[in-house]
Amino acid sequence: MWNAVVHAKGLGPIASKSLLSYLGHFAFGMLVALWIERRRLRVGTGVLRASSTALLMAAGVGLVAVNAVAYEMLSGSSAERIVLAKLPTALGFALVIAAAAAGAGPAVRWLRSRVLVGIGVISYGVYLWHLPLLLAVRKVGLLPASLGLRWLVVLALALGAAALSWFRVEKPLIERAAGPRRQAPQALRPAEAQAAP
Image (tube, rainbow, N blue to C red; front, side, top):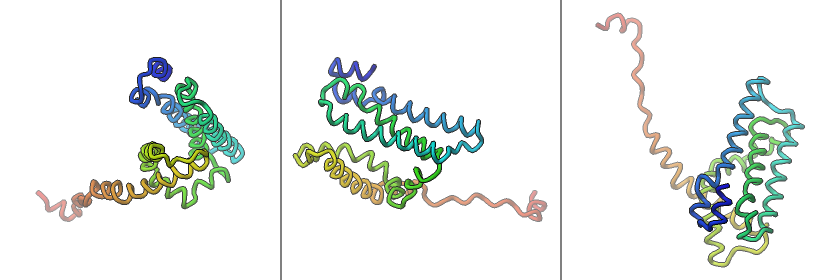
C-alpha cells in the first residue's frame, strides 16, 4: 500500500527507499526465521530432506531469475515495477535462505564453496556499494544494454569495492573496537581463599 501511495503521489526516491517500502522484505525474512524455529521445536532437528531442500532451492533461484527478467522488461515508471516487482525477488531469496538454513544435500552443498564463503564475508560491502556503483556507471554511460553484461559489470565493481571496504575499513574497525581483551581476574585458589580476610 505504501509503495502504491508513493507511486500515485510521486513522492520521490526518499519515500520509495524508506523502511515502509521494504516491510515486505523484512516480513519474508522473519517468516523464514519463524518457520525454521517452529520446525526445529516440532521435529527436533528441523533439517529438511535432500529432495525438499532441492525443491525449495530451485523455487527460490527460479523466482529470483524470472523476476529479474520481468523487472527489466517493465517500464521504469510502471506501477507494477514500482509497487510489486521487488517482492517476488525478496520471496525468492527467502526461499533460498530457508533451504540453506534448514536443508541438506547437494542443493545446498555448493553454498560452502570457498568463493561463496569469501563473498559472504564481504557481502555487507556488496550490499552497500552495488547501488551507488550501478548509478555511477549508468550516469557516465558505461552500463551495457544486455542484462547479463550489466550484471557482470556491476557485480565485478561491487565485489572489488566490497573487498576494499572489508580489508581497509570494516575489518580494521572491528578489530579496533574489540581492542585488547581485558583479562578477568582469576579466581582465588582454595588456599588463598582461606587466607583472605
